[in-house]
Length: 266
Image (cartoon, rainbow, N blue to C red):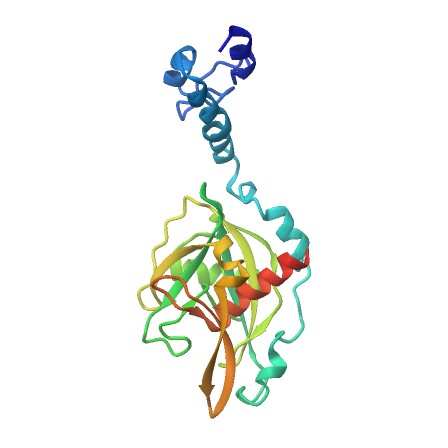
């Protein structure tokens, strides 16, 4: 490689100051990478320029700006200042199965985590002793209490109580369509960005496990299937993902399906 091409390829912009993380504030290289630059071959330089340095630049952004899908999601979701008030989009198909009275109001947090390998979705597995949805995979969330300031506040509170993820590590983006559960809840999903440095501490009385699933997998139509189940003497179809080691089905799969519908509609 000639010297002229090296000069063009170099990421140096003349700001040669080391940050607290040991990276140059200008080019984001380490001192070792800067010292080795003239001895690197073409493949090493291209990997640094095309993969390593962009990843470091992305990692320096505030976590809420790292989600590649953020702008698109804000466009397709119900905005934070306009909470959806309609019945669950599946309400009519459950009319003969719901308990009497109006559904109770609930909120869940559909948390999206920006990772170098792609956006991940946080899911939990409920403990077996819960009254509702025992042992099922679900989003953190629950009933909206009188003390909650609203849907978002309820989703943030439940996420803290179940996983100990503080509100400061969660950036809400908007709402999906409400969903009605057979147990008699009208659930409003809050879609949010989660700081990838979060450390979940599951509440053992509610959460048996917490895990992440790639958003790309959950948004791929071929990975979602319809299965038939018997419920109170009636045959009905529910949605289900075949994620290894976990059964993601029912309300959780339906909420993810709604997210896919909105993204596809964009």
